[in-house]
Image (cartoon, rainbow, N blue to C red; front, side, top):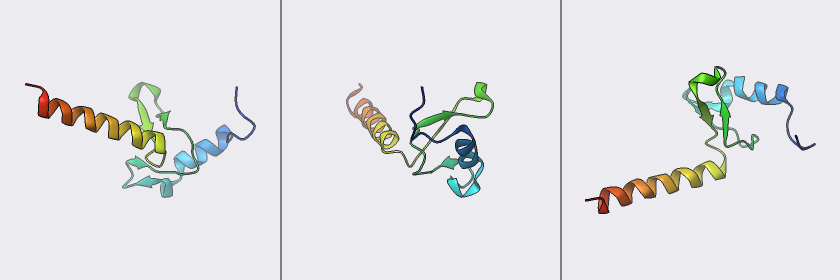
Length: 75
């Protein structure tokens, strides 16, 4: 169920199609969009990440920490 404050599907589509929300055409960066991840247009191709979302940044930092710990102590 959508919250009354959630943007409409039309707004989300407009954000996704706006080239100003894409860095180098590859990285989605939109602080207005609260989604961490959203499906690509062809859903079988996976998901896009919103690099402006703080939750996504925490997830990436945690994954990087895990990888570094495995590199250092994973003998």
